[in-house]
Image 1 (cartoon, rainbow, N blue to C red):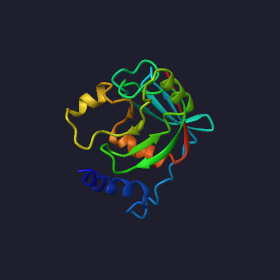
Image 2 (cartoon, helix red, strand yellow):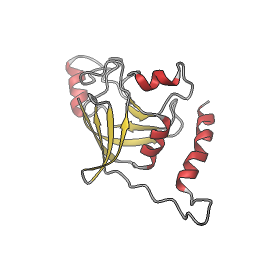
Image 3 (cartoon, rainbow, N blue to C red):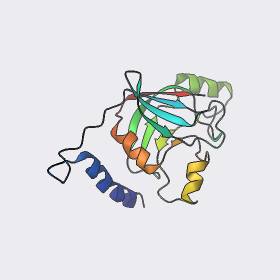
Image 4 (cartoon, rainbow, N blue to C red):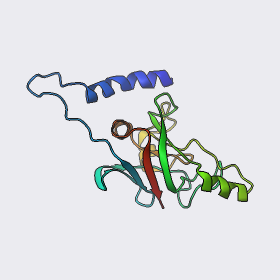
Amino acid sequence: MRTFALVRMLPVLAALTAPAAHAQSGPLPPLELADKILVEKAERKLYLLKAGNVLREFDIALGLFPKGHKHRSGDFRTPEGLYQIDARHSGSNYFLALRISYPNEQDRARARALDANPGGQIMIHGQPNEPKYDESWYRDWDWTDGCIAVSNSDMVDIWLMTQVPTPIEIRP
């Protein structure tokens, strides 16, 4: 099913990056690359920044228990702190995914002190390729295991406007 989602996505990406079909309209303007991602958990917002200025703003969903920093695998919390986007996945269970470099050394030390596994595989991603619920459920609720989720159309923009590595700050 993941291949099907990627195949569905290709025309969208091609349309966003290819010159316009109508000669009078000319090529599409290039999207600016963000030099930082800022996530404000309390606001449920993700911002793409360049030189401190907001390029784009997106609504987000978080882990099932969004308050507080992630301490261990399975706590359904979204981490807080300074990380990097360290990988891009077009074949995940979700519509595109950008991996966040969680856990960092502080996260691993905190988990060791708790005798716990810090977890990992924290991503910014779109909607599930095989949704179990109505689209509105994913839009209106925190539903991830600790990731940051956006709509599929927003994920296309985030995908096109970021690269590896891009710093990401996740605030409470």
